[in-house]
Image (cartoon, rainbow, N blue to C red):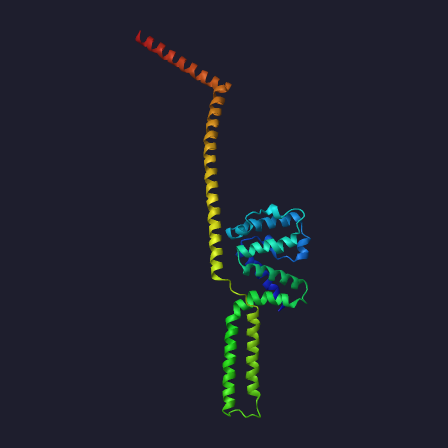
Length: 282
């Protein structure tokens, strides 16, 4: 069981990271126990909190905290533990879902169990709520119904006098089996998370899509502006380089001397050709 609990802590961290899009460092700060969080470097914590704040700035959150910025609520005097457990957790709950927040809180309790194995129920809650009930809930329900069917058959056989009253072991076995299955079913239901209302889930999905579209629109505008600036700057850069090259070519002594030498040689060649042609005519 200890190995299962310990493995589920890491698995749930991975699920949180995939569901929220946060980096591994940010997830570690979100699920960190309160005493360890209070000992971290404040600048590192503030950087992670700002990432969470900006990521959860959707329409639904903005409708509640529309007049607040991160700087308005977080400063040098802010208690980072209370800020995370209150403000950030509420924003995560509003932006993502109750289930994501429950994963974070249960993982934090699971880390407490990892430090102290006497806190067995904290580790059990993490394993049951986020692994066992998700994977084996239908199996447990089926076993409970199967045990009830077996108990009915056993009582029916007893009623038909096929089992003597002096040998109730078969009936006791059926009762104990059904008791065990019902107890397992009860524990499974206790740790099963309640499903979120469909209308809230659709609203959050709609808000998330709108937020992503708005982000893409802003990025498209920024890319267009950058392209325009780069094209204008490129034309100006090319023009300046051409002008500088021409200026350097015309003002260079080597280029001027070479041009003069070429012109003089051309003149000499023309004069020699004319002289030879005149002598041939004579």
